[in-house]
Every structure is written in structure tokens, then in C-alpha cells.
Length: 337
Ligand code: WQD
Image (cartoon, rainbow, N blue to C red):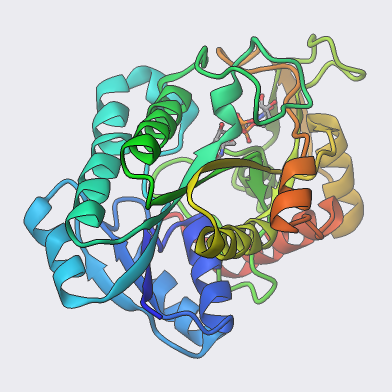
């Protein structure tokens, strides 16, 4: 059995997946350029899982450094997490996103073909569904009319996987469309970190709870939703981690390109999430309604039937545990580096 290569494996979903893979007995290698993560996460992965993954500080766009990983290890599969994920930033810096979120996938797939690595799991996003589809989203819906370069980059890599699966029928591509990754490891040793400002709702709620922000800005309360605020499908990062393991197991027995929604199919508004966070953690979250954030959708949540029926994956952790684990992480190990 070869090793599983995690690109961006020190990131939010990557680090939690690395822990779960090691616990399942997989041999894990992490490549990360530390642009939005740090080595403390590798120490904490080792603390939780009891084994330190082999680590390479490499930029996936540098062919020589990337090939070294393939030459020095027998790699069985690749899970590609690496990429920038700030939707707003992608609008301000599209070239940075196209270069950093598309080119590395090409470099990686090229090395996989060169070294006979046949299984590729891609960290995609519900952002590919765009505004033309009505929630709950199903995997067979048309994608592409995304409202931001972040979503367009995810879709471009999905297209590359589709085309490559036709040209290389002996390869397997598992595309996992995350909805809203939230929560943290119950140990308080792993969670969402960032080197600039956070961009997720839960990160900002925790900043308010820590007293680092006086109030939460709620971007729009005039959406066509029950309470006027944006509705999303929050999914615990540990459930996402097990979704990747199910994807790898499916890739062992199947060829071709397969797409799966990783969500809970449950819709929570901004005000809903604030209410649950306040109840679970006993903390008031003051907020102010502000203008809508450009590109935001009113409603986005998953139809998760396919992941359940085909992968045997169902997200188990509820919104309460996401609020509890996020706050535990923010209180103990919040690394705004
Ligand atoms: C959620 C809701 C905001 C912050 C992102 C990206 C991408 C993807 C999923 C993985 C929206 C509102 C937010 C705040 C607010 N991840 N909000 N005040 O934009 O749904 O999607 O996460 O692929 O990273 O697509 O997530 O957490 O930014 O916003 O009112 O300070 O919270 O308007 O309704 P989003 P989000």
C-alpha cells in the first residue's frame, strides 16, 4: 500500500483529514508551502494521531521540488487541498487565484501521470454551483456561472479532471464539493488558522466572542429568506475528513470521474448560527446589519443523497458541536499568525 500525499495538508480540512487518515492506518505525506499555515499544525497532528507525517515545504508550482516528493516516496493517491479560499480576495486578485488555484493542480496531475499515480481526490466547493441553480444542489446540476474567481478556479480544475478521466481511463478522480466547513478538532489542537483576516462566518463570530471585534457585521438582512439573512449548509470539518476517507475507499474500487456533495443538507441562516452559538457557549454575540457582500447567495445547501448512497458517507456532527468545537479552538489555540 503506497502513501497518501496531502497537498495543503497543514490547512484547515487537510490537517483534520491527515489525522483521520493516520488513525485509519494510512501512511501520510504532507506538502505545504506554509503560505496560510504553520509548522505548529504538524506538531499538533503528531500529538493527536501519535505519528508525524513526512513533510515537505514545497510550492506546487516549482516542478523540481514537487517531483522530489514523487521520486522519494511510493505514492498511492493524492488529495489536493492546497489553494487560496477567500472569495472576496479572489475578486480583488483574480490572477493570484488563477495562478495559485489552477496551475498547481496541473503540475500535480502531470507528476501523477509521470510517476504512475492513479487516484486523485480534489477539494472542490459548493461555490461552483453559482446563482443559476436552486438549492438543494445536486451533483448533476450545471455549474460554471460562478460569482467569483474562487469558484471559477474550482470549476476549471473539475473540468480538467473530467477531461483527464476520458484520456486516462485507468485513473480515478474523486471531486468533493464542500459546503461550509466549520468546527474544529475536539482536542482544541487543530482548527481554522489564517495569516490575514478570517473570512468565514464562524471565524468572525469567534472573534466577537473573544472580544477582538465589538460586534459581528451581518452582510444583508434583506435576502428572500425567513429572517432575511443568508442561509448556508454548515458541515463539521471532522465529517469532511471522513468524507475524504470514503472517497479514497471508493477510488480503490472504481475508475473514472465522480462528484460528491459533502454537506448536511440542513439550512441555517446567519441569525440561526448566532443563536445556536450563544446557547451552546453562553456568550452574547452583538451584531449590526450591513450591506450585502457582493457575490453572496441568499441560499446554498446540499442534496447529500449521492454521498450517502454511493460512498456510504453521512455527516454526523450537529451544528451545536460545530459551535462548541469552534469556540474551544478559538479560546485555546487561535493562531492569527
Ligand atoms: C456564510 C454566510 C455571509 C461573514 C465560503 C467560500 C468558501 C467555501 C465555503 C470551501 C454568508 C455571512 C459571513 C461575516 C456575515 N469553503 N457572513 N458576516 O461565503 O458561504 O462560502 O465558505 O470551499 O470558502 O465559498 O462562507 O462563512 O463567508 O459566509 O454575515 O462576517 O455568513 O454573507 O451568508 P460562504 P462565509
